[in-house]
Image 1: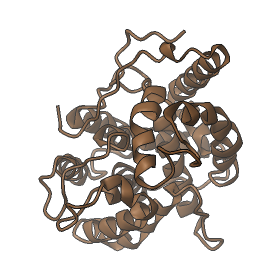
Image 2: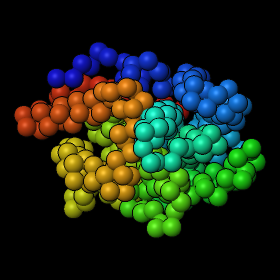
Image 3: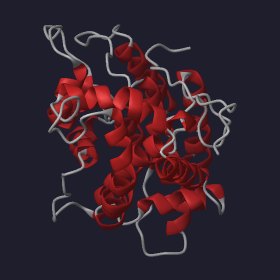
Image 4: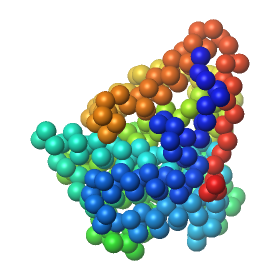
Amino acid sequence: MLDTSRNTQTDPTEKVDLTDPAAVLKAIDAILRARYGADYGLPLLESATADLARAFRGDYPGLLRCDTHYHDLRHALDSGLAMARLIDGQALASADAAEKYIDTEHALLGVLLALYHDIGLLRRTGEEHLEGASLTPVHEARGTEFMRDYLSRTPLAHLAEKAELIMVTRLVWHMPPGLPPRDRVLASMLGSADIMSQLADRAYLEKCRDFLFIEFSAIGLAGAPGLPYPDPQTLLEKTPAFYTDFLRNRMHTEYNDADRYTRFHFGGSCPYEASITRNIDHLSTLLKNNDFSLLRRVPRKVVDAS
């Protein structure tokens, strides 16, 4: 049985408050500074993190306040931190292998793309009539457009076209055959960071029930008989197979098992893997017993900086 007394707002190491942009910034800075040195680009990371928080609370020019509960500021920060850890792990793994080491600029680019990968779910000025979740089918393309413009006004302007790597987080998108090896590795880590951060969330199961179901309803996948997820219980019942048959397969075939890099970062056992295993095992137990009262955590949407 899962321990519901533990803080659901920290990362899998239980050391970083994912509702606090400053805490996540500090954690990412420590990783990049140790790997690449003090001149890796902290000013850009600082301004981008601040802009991200402004965007989700509706204070960024041209964007409206986040109204999605599952894909919130916490998930964005969670993904950015996971990406930094994957990048560090990849550097450690490449030291004794033929893999290409991710250079400083691409490391910072990767973290920024992870932080902003769901920015396309934020409605723009003039889209007040829409639900953010209704943009799900096009949000990766919108995010690519946003980040191409955003990066063009930063020291990474020469890499702005690589904002398209955000598309890898679209679960039906495949990397072009001609994608350079370094970009392929970066995209693989970006896709892995998105999936790992969701599945390792201590309130993942409750968020599927309470938040993801609502987002699916906005795009016609849930909420009525005949749809793939007519009710939250059905969504949860289908989650184990979705994880084992689809997500794990995508991480293996499309992302080349890039999630393994976290083991190098942590020097062995991986807190993300342990948390994911606990969540899936707990879900299997409650499904076997048909006892959904075991979902006792109360998730909350995170928009504003704490």
